[in-house]
Image 1: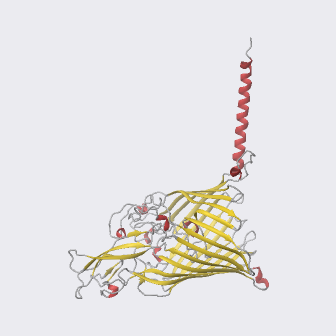
Image 2: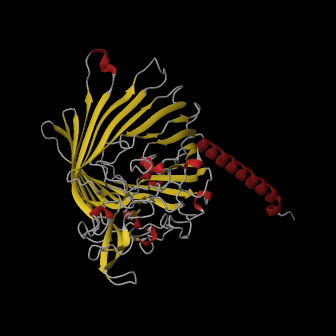
Amino acid sequence: MTNCGSMNAPRRARGTIFRVIRLTAALISLVAGIGRGAEPPVLSAQPGFLRTLNITGFVQNTSATFLDTQAIEYNRSKSSLAVERNMIQVDINDDLSDRDSVFMRMWGVYEPSYPYETDCLSPFLLQVHCNSDFYNQYGIREVWLKHRQGPLQLLVGRQIVTWGESLSFRVGDQINPQDLSWNFGFANLEQSRNPLWMIHPVWNLRRLGPFSSNFAELVYVPGVDFLYTQVDYSNDQYDGQDQVAGRVNINPATPGGRFAPRIDARVLGSPGIVVEQAPPILTLRNFPVAGVVLAADVNGVPSMTDQAIPRATWANSQLGIRLHTLIWNTEVTVMYYYNHDYKPVVKLFAQQGFIPIGPGVFIERAKSIYPSYQAGGVTANRAINLPGRLADLPLVVRAEALYKNHEAFNTLAIPGTFFTHFLPTGSASALAYSDELLWLFALDLAAAYAPWLTATGNVNANFELNGTTILSYNNLMSTAGYFERQYRNDVNLLCHIDTSWWWNSVAPSWTSIYNPNGQTWLFFPSILFTPPWTNRYLMKLQWIEILGTNAFGLDGGVFKGKSLLLAQFQYNFSLF
């Protein structure tokens, strides 16, 4: 008797093989379609959140070399390797409902242990551990939920909010701290911003006469900004503070950081007699007794400076309020901040005691603090309509100003030191306070038609004049750790111009910043290459040059010698 099942087995096997082949072919076709940028087919059985899911990102390698390692005379290593940064970014966008959407950005960054940073000796030849894994990052960078309800948009999560008008300077842009640890803080302002956990409602308002596009915006930051990467400093300054370390700037790893500023190790005095030695923030200091200085000053080292990052309390919460409007053709915003500084000042805490040096000796601890401040600001920008043939130039003028109340500065007027003639006068805390004005004026040329230069692109240009003014100025105001004085009026001029050829295949740009103090020049020329047949691949070449006459100038001169040449390769992908 014939077994019908055994006769049908080869047929079922062949059918199964054919189905597997068809399914494999379909998957290959789907993957190939995604690789070409095509949208995957939408299946009616998919849940709604899958139909709106969008996953994009890029993989990026950045390699750079110092141009003249012999010019970096203040570091023991002469390795030419400046950057070998490997990074992946993944962005996830999705609509959970008609009113709710979510965004998440993940970063993974790997950098090797640089020869430049393996010889980790402090300026005082104290051995400390190195920064071999300091730059590595992994995890969620941004994640927030947006809910829309009538005129209200509510964003809750870890976000970046930019309220300022400047392209490269921070005037009204005061909400997010910065990562200044790699490739200089001024070389990539966009990627240097660090997100914060916040509640961020935006309320759209009705038109009122000439006032249109009205909305009110609020940012509340409770301060629960945990940080688990980029906290392993060589001097252990953040030990035990990871739960709030994300509330302040990430500074270059010192000593020995590749992008750390030059350390001020100068001394004041006559040959053979040292009356003051940098850094001029002391941890052990003599007071004169009967007009006689008993011993030379004993200066503190960075590893002895405690960090006092503001804790997550109601009093340390951060608040920002902004009102936006369009008055005819002028966009205007008004803002208010209750915030704390992201860059520290050093405060001295004196305790009288006795050690074998002699009587009248004060022992002091130096603590880096981040003082609170209140500030109010305004921004405005307006398109300029020129007559005649000049009407083809799309010019925009921008301006912004921020008034900071009771800003804290370090001062060299410390009692019992050279700067106070060794008298017990001055500021025992090494702090001075003054209101401060930050301001900016800018002119933009946006997408100008220039057939004499390019037939397939436009010309863009930006000119920014930026400054800070200390209203109650004292010529002994300084930055902690430096003899350099703060400037009463600190001015920077930025010039940027870019264009493109062959439909954005070749896009050169030139950016430079000039500061008259120390005649400091910062140059960032670059050229971006994108194949004409795809935008998935790109390569950028950039030159960063630092010039100046003052090697300790706080506007860039402290980075002299670290000029570099950079190459960046990027592959963009889209998964859904």
